[in-house]
Amino acid sequence: MLPWNKMFPFPKDYMKQDIFKQSDIEKWMSKATQGKLPPNPQMLGTTDFFAQSLEFLKTAQIKKKQKKANPFEAKVFETHDEVFIRFPVKSEEQLQQLKTSYNTTSLFVENIPASGNKQTITLPCLVKGNSSKARYQDGIVEVRIAKETQHSVTKVPIEIIKSKRKK
Image (cartoon, rainbow, N blue to C red; front, side, top):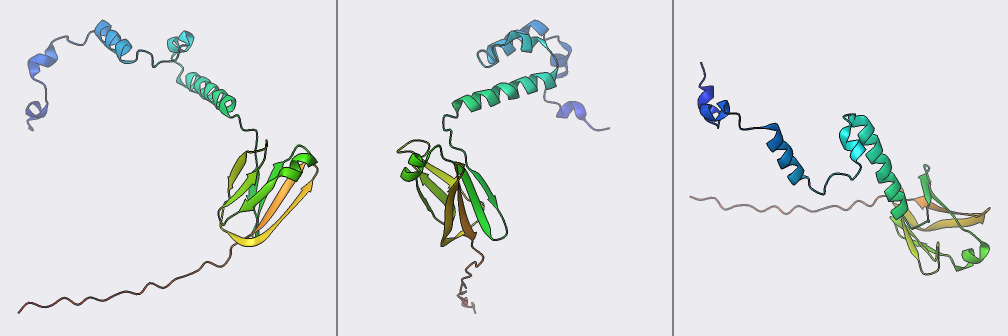
């Protein structure tokens, strides 16, 4: 028989005593979680985990939407040959102030939604330089950029170092 009692970290007498009382644990838990639990007391009384999780998720989503002050939203999608970026523009006056530029990984849009603002849109893949087209129709700007199909490959030379043999 294996000596399980010797491996257990607490002495036998310690485990026989009723040291863990419900009231002590409740006091310790309330002290440990002071100010960290949600203020909604009706949620604390229920034991339905899924209802609580759904409620917390809804409140978190509402708070996230309220914090999101930037009304700019662009839709990005890709085909086999191109990447499309579409975003709304309120008026043709705003379109006149709009400036767009891009690099191989991002599209930059300036002066939208207001003058002086700059938006960065991450592209889903590498794109070619100097291959973009943009058009405005029905309040939507659509930017098309060709995808990069040629990936450069660079050879890495390996230096061979011979060690000296000991005699």
